[in-house]
Image 1 (cartoon, rainbow, N blue to C red):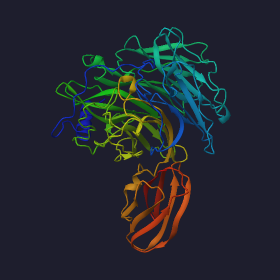
Image 2 (image 1 turned 45 degrees about the vertical axis):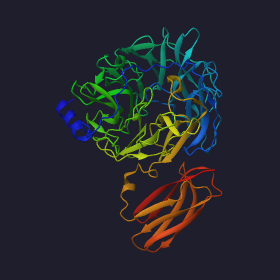
Image 3 (image 1 turned 135 degrees about the vertical axis):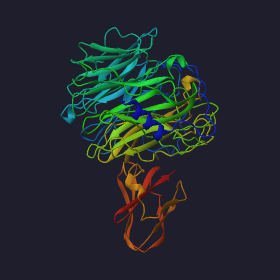
Image 4 (image 1 turned 90 degrees about the horizontal axis):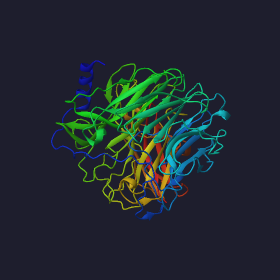
Length: 585
């Protein structure tokens, strides 16, 4: 990489120094690598309902902590537009780890669900999900991965394949590489040529490992191991167009702070034959001692519609040798070989940094903006980056941890520039006690859009913080599947060009029985006002007629609507605007 060009890009677009007060300093103690066997039972709180977090509840878990800092891959949509999703589940009430497992669910084309089923052995967890790349939809099957405690803390990585498309039959002859005791937190990738790649972290040392099978687990190879890996950051992605596979990770520059967890570069390897052979390990950041940022533990990647690699990651602010609780999301792609800012900030700190001074920090393995994931619109090549975070400094739980939201930004030029972010979930519960938090966290995103919609899953944590790391209490938490039309929630740049519609509001909000839609028009024009549900299906045409210039007020009756999130879309010729409508029951 041209380092001069790189530093100019980072300095001009991301900012280097803060104006005014600095955020809180990061803790220099290392975070625990949770296996799932940490038992910390305080009080168990049931799910009380009344949520405003968007999406269908596809299951429940009393173990909100789904990952040790790394990005997640737990959702795919097959060629018949059916959704495969999994998560780490502990049944409520939580009584230890003996029933811990991966759980699975499946959404049919008509929007109905198979129902959640056990997708692994017991005492398993911290896994991932992929989809086989068979040409026939009936043969496209869920692939799950997880680590399994066989007893006496002997952990092994496994992957398993469903018996058929949407069957939900697990375990189904799970496979694991030989000699992999203490290889945990596996992520699986299903290559186009039928190979399976398993990325793991070494619980006994600072290594990431790659294992490959070309015959569904009968034989294995170990093409490489990466040292200097203090974070569980490995992410493996297979192309849907070719036999390419990418392995991305963070590796520490020095282990002098938090055993190497705070001081990382971003690296990647690329295979063109389904993981059998790999190119060189390439450092795309090469941070220097005087730089104002370091990579942390969350990095992910996708292949775009032209089969080019894109990588996103979170960085932490560094100044005069000190590490701070402030972060940004950055993007790189192999064609331009440049780094650009994704997560513009409107927070209290300058330079685009997310963060504020929170006494408890942001929790174990967390940053103010982190866990970035991408999805590509295959028809146009537009990129969407989604991440977890909180830009509302008041939205902190009673226990002192941020209630996260899910944010998104869009790029129409291969990641060279990114639009201002939109808060997709936008729930706020400042000061909420245990059981009442709306903390949308631990997201996973299908890497491509389907029918103009983006599919993601997340945990609605009812008490912000990771219980296994000493943060908050145990709660029974919904696992949500959230489907939204790309141009409704605001991630479409066309939505910002509202020169003709001067106002669209819904008051009061949230809505119980009825509300008013308020909007203004600059001239007499044909007007369409429609209501859509969270999956993009038309619910109701509110009005469709010619309207005069000026302000308008329309009453909407919501008695017959189920509780949840909807979108009101106002259209006039050559222009459109949308607003979120939240119905509570």
